Image (cartoon, rainbow over all chains, first blue to last red; front, side, top):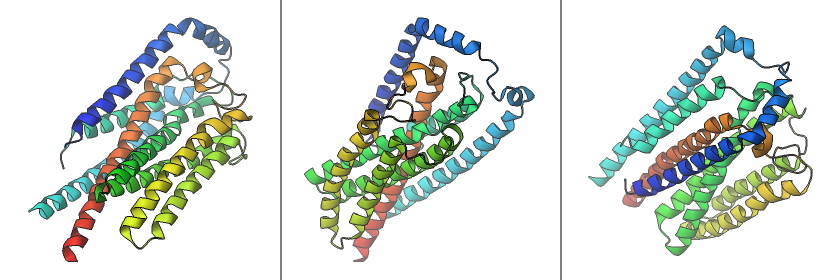
Length: 91
Length: 222
């Protein structure tokens, strides 16, 4: 693919943004602790803690992963079909 | 198919998004509860839409400079894929709004503006469909594409901030950066944006290659 360097550049750009943000978030930790404490007093807020403790959320994750795998395999097969057509057109 | 490295990255990041998105720790916030995890699935749709529509404008400008079939096809298909992301974004947003804001559609400035934005892009395809002559269609829709993107930016990012909005980051509400999102969420959120956007670009890649082949076959047959 001719476009590879462009993709490489965009990805590096994305990753650099990611890391700078993580770095910023870490430096801003002092400000965040007050926030965490404010929330820690609110542990009574309803979350799906038991669902994960029971381990049942994993089946949901597994289902979604199966759906994703199906979609990706279909996309790969489409990609292959288009590639074959491209080869046929060239020859 | 060349199994290029960025396609592998797409799959890995998508798997990471889903596993980490469901299982990693998130801040405990009232009203939002576990629905805060929607950040990894709803928000990337809009990020992806903006990036894909940006690609669309890029190729529209490129088409106006050098009118090739490839530029026109890439521009159109990127707009189509962006619109798919936008529709998914608005549907997931409505579902999320039902549980947190109380109603599917509360006429929130952000909701209305994004609906208008999507309608502008539907109009783009209506416009495309109304030309029989190929070059005219490509040129005029490329010009409209630039206009639509230029109008979309204030609609999504400026106007909702000028009034009160329920949507985070707008009106009187603080943005995600202030407290809704902590550094743990960022570790999942940014990869999820990259993952969904790359998936959109992959589909765009396949679809536009297909369209280019279709045009070549038509030309040979004619």
